[in-house]
Length: 359
Image (cartoon, rainbow, N blue to C red; front, side):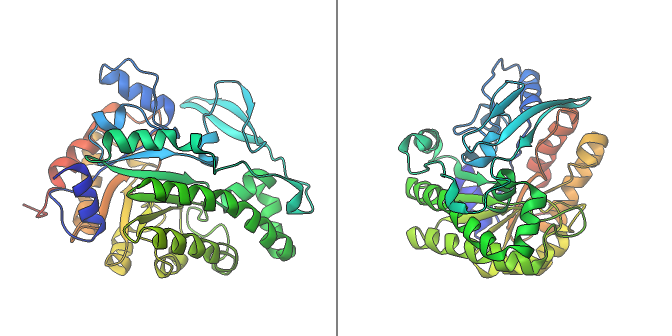
């Protein structure tokens, strides 16, 4: 099978030749992996519009063109910088790697959503990278438009998390108007991305913590579900064959059925220390493809290569039957993850993930 055929077969809940795979990395981890492969390249894939060489070298089954708020992470090498939304970012050095974090929220004190202007996502130049991916690789690989940090995350990136959590409880009229204003970027970007001809459009908002939701299911259903439903309906109207993926770290089990109800096809990353992938597969596997499931909190960084192999085998056995599984680490591979463990993930997924399973 081609990479694209393999991906689309599993999303359609049929068994391909093997389980599709992908991974994404922090820039430091990506450069470390490229050096291991003998590739001298600063072209990293992480949150960029047209990607670097690593996904091709590692035989990922789809390629991601990133755009929107998520591209502000690792955007520039400056110690501090401001992105196009006005959000202030700063690099922080840790023993295991360097990371960017938000240090300024430009809309913290606004009283009326009409007070600020949104970046223009109708501009054609924003989609040059995606079009290059489609032209060069679209026949062989699945192509995904990655528009994560879509609505709830963008809301608090701009305004501050504590303030947004208060808004949705104490200032509901403001919050609804604010979310509607923010929705305009993803409406414009989503239409462009679907019109370009992607196989998958991927949005996401972290609404889960390690063992509970960051917002209540009721708040999710009031502020996020109707707006996601509006997006999903428009994209499916434009192209009934386009697949929709949604990302949220952590525990979101109480609202998975809500996402399925409004037309979600793929759930990422099914973080195994927060939700049991086997249970998600059992309850939703006939309607939902699981993308992720490989533990990035303990096994990949701190386990042995043998531990990683066993983790991959477990997920294939318990979530791979009948298709509907894309194997991937449950978030960015970090600089501290040993090369041997990364290679064990890929090797085991390709060998043990062959259908029929267990042969």
